[in-house]
Amino acid sequence: MKIIRRRTRTISLGGVKIGGNSPVSVQSMTKTNTLDVAAIVAQVRQLELAGCDIVRTAVKDASCCEALAKIMKKINIPLEADIHFDYRLALAAINAGVDGVRLNPGNVYKKEEIEAVIKAAKKRRIPVRVGVNSGSVRIPKGGVTKERFPALMVKAALDYIKIIESLGFRDLQVSLKVSDVGQTIDAYRLMAKKCDYPFHLGVTAAGPELSGTVKSALGIGILLSEGIGDTIRVSLTGDPVQEVIVGKNIIQGLGLRQFGPEVLSCPTCGRTEVDIIGIANRVEQALGKIKDEKGKLSGLRVAVMGCVVNGPGEAKEADLGIAAGKGSGFLFIKGKPVRKIRESEFVSAIIKEITRIIK
Image 1 (cartoon, rainbow, N blue to C red):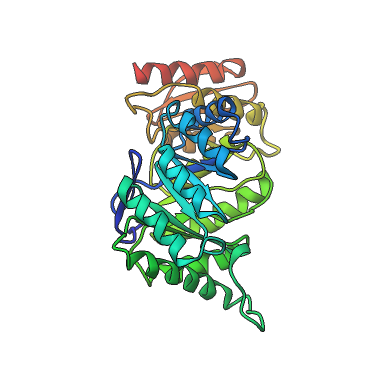
Image 2 (image 1 turned 135 degrees about the vertical axis):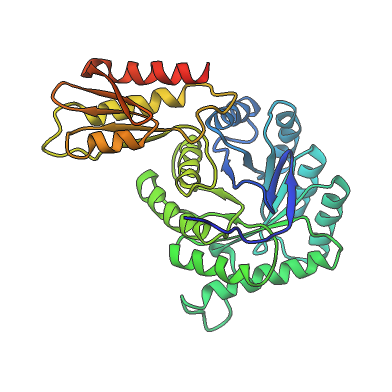
């Protein structure tokens, strides 16, 4: 599938470019108290190791901004300050050295307050995200139908952007997040017709790991497949590292970026006579720990197949694979069977070949 990306402006958040021809970036958000500098820094480093490009941190009060100044000196990836209610927190965060700020039109809306933030961002040459969430959109008297709600969100974003543009500022990105997948898709599709700013995609309050992953994959994946979206955040109730892993898988699954080897494994059935589930999980975990500084494993396909029906054929289609039988199987490299190995050797044989590739 060939995806033609929507044409947008390009902004720079720290060292990461968003929009234009830039790769779709992966974001997450810290989930520890911003005042706990050591905990925040440790979590950011975990996210960086997982492949996170940009991290966002909640700024609840002025003391958080003091912590931000310390945090910025100890992390390597760009940090965006998440601002709500009090525009002065945005000013303090900008002064603390953050790489960008997110403003919510639903709770930072006075024109003079917006102007103050934009003036500070312009001086520091950092971008601003206009982040509209369904929960903070002002509903008109008489209410609004579910079908019309995306249009209301888009109007809220456009009205806000109009104020910012009047100040001669266009280093913007836009997000329109709803917990409903369909409404999220409708909002971004409509907004894509109205402006050329890069989009931050996400389904807000998507839920716990399983349901949140499914909803995020649908909402984000459908939009990315249509060329809409420049940076993403998978919102899960859980470990932020998992948000990054899911986000990377969505992007890689669509062929928009290659982060490393892709593991292909069969779902197993009554014909399976080895522990394919355990083997596939161990292979994926082991591959995730391998450092591939030169990118030699990017796009590599590793197959772990469990029976003689589809196994040999699908293992041949991968760069490296195992086609299992009863207690043993064949190791395939570049479509050719190399040797027969025992089940206990499956994982070590794959890792050995992977290690050989990156040397």
